[in-house]
Image 1 (tube, one colour):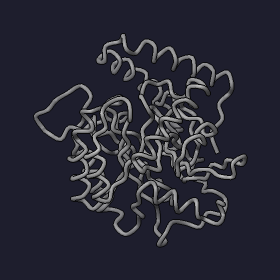
Image 2: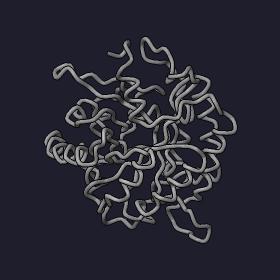
Image 3: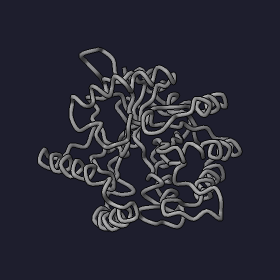
Amino acid sequence: MSMRMHPRSMDNVALRNRLFYQLKPFIPRRLQIWLRHQLALRKRAADMDAWPILPEADQPPVGWSGWPEQKKFALVLMHDVESAAGQQKCADLMGLEQQLGFRSSFNFVPERYQVLPEVRHILVANGFEVGVHGLNHDGKLFQSRQIFQERAVKINVYLKEWQAVGFCSPASHHNLEWTHDLDIAYDSSTFDTDPFEPQPDGVKSIFPFWVEDTARQTGYVELPYTLAQDFTLFILLKEKNINLWQQKLAWIVEKGGMALVITHPDYMNFHKNEVKLETYPASYYSHFLNHIKTNYEGLYWQALPKEVASFVKNRPAVC
């Protein structure tokens, strides 16, 4: 199901990423953002035919029979919490979604900052989900098989401790074969199309799919994100509205796919008088949720990632 890159291209991407993460600590953050903004503008111009919509990504898995309750499309909301500052905004983000009648999943980085048990417990108690977002968020998780295997042991400990069943890799780095080492029901480290990510090989699908581990006769569900990440839209591309989200969502609805969006509380500005380099108004996100309620009420199955994974796993055609 994965979009295959030429081996030489994959090697070049791996080398570029390794160099970037080695140099990153020495590059001022403001300069990093400026450089990435310039690169994003060039990529956007070069990939107009494949982003934000990749026409060929509309094909459902073999035997697909639709969503529960005959809903037109699935809606999945996910948040990657990348810092302690982002963790402090989780309550605000949860409250925003609760007011509009939505639920979501929050993914935390176990060893980058202190993940507070009370934050996780409050989220779960209110019907939200908690997942694991890498281990250190240092760009090295997939640099080698040995590194991944060593870190997978630790990641599995956190999955068990947090009673979590989902994983989301930082920077969307991925290797679907290696990911079988994780004790998960689902992974969400890929996308249908996203030329702005460090590892830009998309899976070319707006549907979830089963990733089989034939050796162990098990597997997990892959949930590719299908709407552009907020950091890409509002920080790198400096969009000032949600038009691209609305455009892509309308296409996903037409095709009956899964609208999965990953946002970050770290970059959301919940206070109008707070102006920072890497924030955007949280009202963009609330406007998007209101847009969904207003225009698609009754048409979507709004599910937690673990609920989508359970649905896909138990689909007769998948197993």
